[in-house]
Image 1 (cartoon, rainbow, N blue to C red):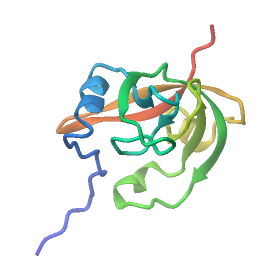
Image 2: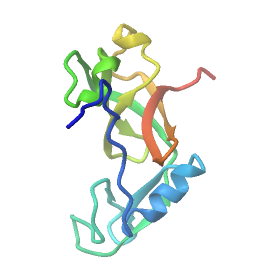
Image 3: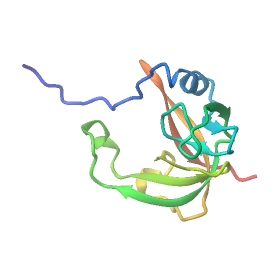
Amino acid sequence: MTTSDTCSKPTPVRDPETDEFFDAARRGRLLLRYCRHCSHYALRPGKHCPECLSPLTWVSGSGLAQVWTWTRIHHAAHPGFAADVPYVLVTARMAEGPLLTLRLIDDDGGNGDIEVGTPLQVDFIEHPDADPTPVFRRAADD
């Protein structure tokens, strides 16, 4: 048995329930699950609203958010991320209301200045053999 010196990063797995999300991600658009009955956004998988059990639908999200909390990762949880440490994971409040946790990719190797309230924008990292991965970037100053 041989082993490789490098390990690839895990990438998203597409299934029929997430096809629409990943099709939009390939076009650089963020989709969110939304309940038209009670106006609740659901970021976890599922076909029904966790609040009222009505059917969920995909809607376009703005991609805009603000840092709610964050942490700097110093020990990779998966060997594929070992070369990336330190890096920052951010939980941000989306403009639509729900909290979303993603990697902050423009944080100067984990040494950048980040604080609660920092404006963010969702972006997508392309992969050669997999669907794009959503990440946060700092929002451009207007």
